[in-house]
Length: 206
Image 1 (cartoon, helix red, strand yellow):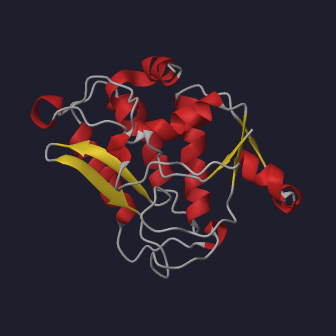
Image 2 (spheres, helix red, strand yellow):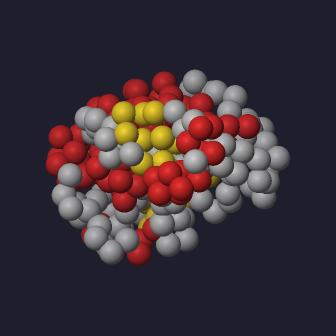
């Protein structure tokens, strides 16, 4: 069993951890942390890594539990993020297989961040044919501090160090000839470049 945090279309190292787990519990009562992948993902662009951030009500410095974090729609970030995906991956071989279902997620406009992240997680699990069972992170488990701390894993890679992953999954990226290979991007990069079948095979590698 793995207890961890939800990520916004998580980076490849994070998805590998989910892929290796039989059961996953997402700790949605943990305080929101800025500079994390909870509301940010990194994709490829012709200029290098592009950070896409979801704005939240109250700003990023708050310590509110994740399940209480509300999404801000003062700016149309959902449209901007989808447009960034379309613009940067229009030449990728597999974008067309995913873009319609992604548009449904982005246009759903849920009120809270955790709702959106759970939608993205289920989408990823389906595309990579993951078998992890999502379980409730119960109060009883949290009261058992030893069990909780043993099972909980804080993902080591953040938006400021994600490229330092020591055992990256490698594949041909869209802008690789211009920017060089960028390791540990969002799982979307792997799916758009390789497709679900190859992505699943690469995620299984040790």
